[in-house]
Amino acid sequence: MSAIGTGPSASVRAEARAGALVSPALTAVRALEASVTDATREAALACWPWVGRGDAHAADAAATEAMRAALARAPGKGVVVTGEGEKDEAPMLFTGERVGSGDGPDFELAVDPLECTDFCAAGLAGALATIAVAEPGALWSPGPAFYMDKIVVSAPARAAIDIRDEPEVNLERVAAALGRRVEELRVVVLDKPRHEALIGRLRELGAAVSTPADGDVAGALAALLPAGEADVLMGIGGTPEGVMTACAARALGGGMEGRLAPQRDDESAALADAGVDIERRLTLDDLVRGEALFAATGVTGGSLLRGPWDTDDATWTESIVISPPGAARRVVEARDKRYVPEAPAPERRGTKS
Image (cartoon, rainbow, N blue to C red; front, side, top):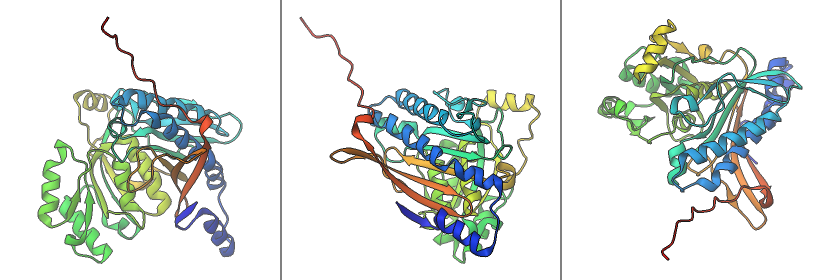
């Protein structure tokens, strides 16, 4: 196990030295850390046999069912506030689904059992199993909204952003907050047709722009973590990913703002019917209003986390757990190979007689 920044045990010791009291809500959220990490690990191991096999639906279904089973064992009574499957018509832990053993405190979740499903199916780096958990009433519910515009930065630049301003203005303020030139900034923007103009504007300003096909949670973490490979995440992505990112940002003291950005006619109609103001500025305090933690486990590996790997008698996973106040640590765990799902058998096709 290795630390990134300050580990939870060090945080607790620092609070004790300062005479600070840990709130009951924070204690309750921290008590779920092992269960949350177990859920992402189980999801990663379940879909790992599907890596590179071209079946995104099967991989997603395997991860979802494994995460659901793990969360059923979590102490307490949880409810899913937002999940990824509705947007993609994929297997999902549905919004409003109840999880937990029933014995313990209430909690809320935002989940994506397999972030970057297509990466998993294609055997490409970057797929993760992700989850965020928070005290009751803390998580913003996106309702019928599937997409939102986001800007995410690390703690030193958290006061420099405003989603209502032009991207050039935000980038210049972020650069000033970090004590750097715009030309030195590294920005993550998903490689989508909707972002073609944004990417051009940012590069015209002189910033270096990375454009992964998917994975705005990983992109946001690259901006939030002290040793991350980016300074800013910008652009439109999913609302479940936005809520999970907000939990990580709050725990790390980073900055995030959002605004709804419907991408489909049915989404726009549903938001209009619900009377939702899509121009509303969503601050970090709007997105997560209480104590929360975030966890992810690598599925296909990448710069953030390694995917599962085998040794002689065990299968190993690497996870990251981000919890308040400002704690981020890697967790490497082994699982006896006898309890790891096997690769799916290939379809048998008819042979000539």
